[in-house]
View 1 (cartoon, one colour):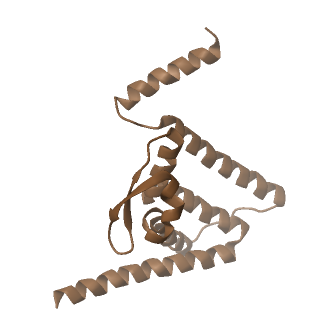
View 2: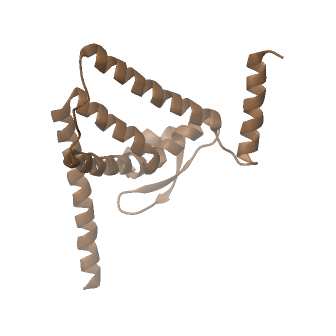
View 3: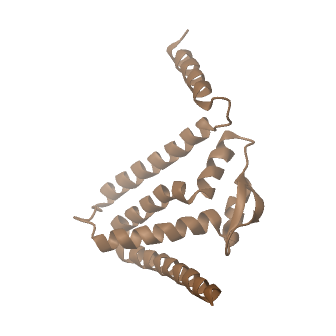
Length: 172
């Protein structure tokens, strides 16, 4: 048995043990992690080559701004009805779920579609990707990135105010 076939055999055995009879798209997850790692490595190399440097420090205000913006952008991508066309190749519509949001089920006909579907329907999963995008923006175009982040953060604040207003109205 060659080294490559021994590694494949070991990986299949480990995957079967991990799955425990469930449908878990490990190869799709591995591909998604590879895309993420390649994108981070590529951005890092590009930044170095073009002479961009990370900021000396990131202020608490930037952390708060990017955190709120990441929250809003991930919910927009993962749950908003108007972004359904982005998720449609990887999900099936189930029902409305909250104001302006939908519940979709992930398609499982391929490991790649399953993994991407899970990523696109999970705000928590998307957070790493979106947060990394804001971090890269802070290096390459900080002013524009802060403007975009402020836009999404203001929408998040507006959402919370809308929910608070509705809660107050329902008490009357």
